[in-house]
Amino acid sequence: MVTLSERRDIRIAKTADQGWHYQHTQYQKMLKNNGVIQSMSRKGNCIDYSMMENFFELMKNELLYVNHFESLDSFETEFKKYIMWYNTKRIKLRLKGMSPAQYRAHYYREFNN
Image (cartoon, rainbow, N blue to C red; front, side):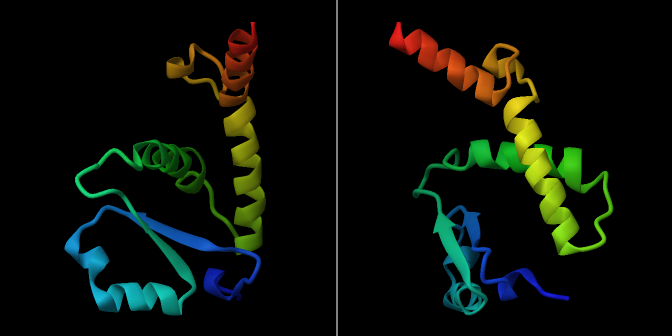
Protein backbone atom coordinates (compact mmCIF):
# COMPACT_ATOMS: atom_id res chain seq x y z
CA MET A 1 0.00 0.00 0.00
CA VAL A 2 1.30 3.46 -0.91
CA THR A 3 1.15 6.11 1.80
CA LEU A 4 0.28 9.72 1.09
CA SER A 5 3.85 10.85 1.69
CA GLU A 6 5.06 8.38 -0.98
CA ARG A 7 2.70 9.72 -3.64
CA ARG A 8 4.55 12.30 -5.71
CA ASP A 9 1.35 13.68 -7.26
CA ILE A 10 -0.06 14.76 -3.88
CA ARG A 11 1.28 17.64 -1.79
CA ILE A 12 0.32 17.62 1.86
CA ALA A 13 -0.07 20.81 3.88
CA LYS A 14 -0.52 21.02 7.65
CA THR A 15 -2.21 24.15 8.93
CA ALA A 16 -2.10 25.11 12.58
CA ASP A 17 -2.08 27.97 15.00
CA GLN A 18 1.20 29.15 16.49
CA GLY A 19 1.13 26.86 19.51
CA TRP A 20 4.56 26.05 20.93
CA HIS A 21 4.35 22.39 19.87
CA TYR A 22 3.86 23.41 16.22
CA GLN A 23 6.91 25.67 16.43
CA HIS A 24 9.09 22.96 17.99
CA THR A 25 12.15 22.17 15.86
CA GLN A 26 11.68 18.39 16.02
CA TYR A 27 8.03 18.65 14.96
CA GLN A 28 8.91 20.91 12.02
CA LYS A 29 11.75 18.56 11.02
CA MET A 30 9.40 15.55 11.11
CA LEU A 31 6.94 17.35 8.81
CA LYS A 32 9.71 18.34 6.41
CA ASN A 33 11.18 14.81 6.34
CA ASN A 34 7.74 13.49 5.38
CA GLY A 35 7.19 16.04 2.63
CA VAL A 36 4.56 18.00 4.54
CA ILE A 37 4.34 21.77 4.01
CA GLN A 38 3.66 23.60 7.26
CA SER A 39 1.41 26.66 7.36
CA MET A 40 0.65 28.62 10.51
CA SER A 41 -1.92 31.29 11.22
CA ARG A 42 -0.87 34.81 12.02
CA LYS A 43 0.08 35.44 15.62
CA GLY A 44 -2.96 36.24 17.74
CA ASN A 45 -5.44 35.62 14.91
CA CYS A 46 -7.35 32.44 15.65
CA ILE A 47 -9.86 32.96 12.83
CA ASP A 48 -7.35 32.65 9.97
CA TYR A 49 -8.39 29.07 9.25
CA SER A 50 -11.98 29.15 10.49
CA MET A 51 -13.50 28.66 7.01
CA MET A 52 -11.25 25.67 6.30
CA GLU A 53 -11.88 24.20 9.75
CA ASN A 54 -15.61 24.52 9.09
CA PHE A 55 -15.27 22.82 5.69
CA PHE A 56 -13.21 19.92 7.07
CA GLU A 57 -15.65 19.40 9.96
CA LEU A 58 -18.50 19.14 7.43
CA MET A 59 -16.48 16.87 5.14
CA LYS A 60 -15.61 14.51 7.98
CA ASN A 61 -19.25 14.27 9.08
CA GLU A 62 -20.74 14.02 5.58
CA LEU A 63 -18.13 11.83 3.89
CA LEU A 64 -15.39 10.39 6.06
CA TYR A 65 -17.27 9.12 9.13
CA VAL A 66 -20.19 7.64 7.17
CA ASN A 67 -18.19 5.62 4.63
CA HIS A 68 -15.61 2.86 4.60
CA PHE A 69 -12.90 3.24 1.97
CA GLU A 70 -11.11 0.15 0.68
CA SER A 71 -8.10 2.12 -0.54
CA LEU A 72 -6.59 5.55 -0.89
CA ASP A 73 -7.75 5.56 -4.52
CA SER A 74 -11.37 4.90 -3.53
CA PHE A 75 -11.20 7.71 -0.97
CA GLU A 76 -9.68 10.04 -3.56
CA THR A 77 -12.48 9.25 -6.03
CA GLU A 78 -15.19 9.85 -3.43
CA PHE A 79 -13.46 12.99 -2.14
CA LYS A 80 -13.44 14.48 -5.66
CA LYS A 81 -17.15 13.68 -5.98
CA TYR A 82 -17.78 15.28 -2.59
CA ILE A 83 -15.94 18.47 -3.59
CA MET A 84 -18.01 18.70 -6.78
CA TRP A 85 -21.24 18.14 -4.82
CA TYR A 86 -20.21 20.59 -2.10
CA ASN A 87 -19.41 23.35 -4.59
CA THR A 88 -22.36 22.89 -6.95
CA LYS A 89 -25.24 21.28 -5.03
CA ARG A 90 -24.89 21.70 -1.26
CA ILE A 91 -26.82 24.78 -0.17
CA LYS A 92 -25.77 26.94 2.75
CA LEU A 93 -28.03 29.29 4.68
CA ARG A 94 -25.18 31.80 4.97
CA LEU A 95 -25.09 31.92 1.17
CA LYS A 96 -28.79 32.81 0.94
CA GLY A 97 -29.76 29.18 0.32
CA MET A 98 -27.39 28.79 -2.63
CA SER A 99 -24.45 26.49 -3.27
CA PRO A 100 -21.00 28.12 -3.31
CA ALA A 101 -20.94 28.05 -7.13
CA GLN A 102 -24.41 29.57 -7.39
CA TYR A 103 -23.54 32.25 -4.85
CA ARG A 104 -20.32 33.13 -6.67
CA ALA A 105 -22.20 33.43 -9.99
CA HIS A 106 -24.90 35.53 -8.29
CA TYR A 107 -22.27 37.80 -6.75
CA TYR A 108 -20.53 38.41 -10.09
CA ARG A 109 -23.85 39.11 -11.83
CA GLU A 110 -24.74 41.66 -9.14
CA PHE A 111 -21.25 43.15 -9.11
CA ASN A 112 -21.13 43.62 -12.88
CA ASN A 113 -24.57 45.29 -13.13
